[in-house]
Image (cartoon, rainbow, N blue to C red):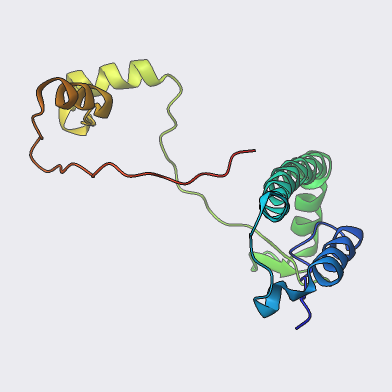
Amino acid sequence: MELQVSEFDAFDEAAREAMLEEANNIFGSIGDDQFHVTNANTAAWVTDRIQAWKSEIERIKDTAAAEVKRRENMITYFMGKFEQELEAYARSSMPSTRKSMVLPNGIKLSFRTIPPKLEVKDESQFLDWAKAWMPEAVVVKESVSKSTVNTHWKDTGEIPQGCEVAPERVGFYING
């Protein structure tokens, strides 16, 4: 059986080819259940792969986040530079009886009435007003401090209502 690596398994074509070569040529029998962790070297190889993929995931996340931010900045720039011109074009090109138009690329420019709404400018003043004049609108969030209850449980042995003790167990971790 030959292993396949999809375009989503590797960040670029070179990484994809390297993964395929390593998986198929060096350990091509993995898919046939002939490879097993039997010694320190095989365990090291498997854990190296796991750590490399974890590192690759973080690199991909960082790269993707930077690209998303770059695109968001481009959108902000284009909106700041061209929004008024787009609006002026739409107003001059659209019959007064219409509220939208479709451009040759299929993107729609449209106008719509936005109803009035409250905008909170000072959260503290707003909260003070609500407490004095509309207390039913004030939301109080209740939660339990798990660390405080855990300390109480360890000190007293009391198991709070709605809780149960998970038995001690040995967990297995791969740390890099």
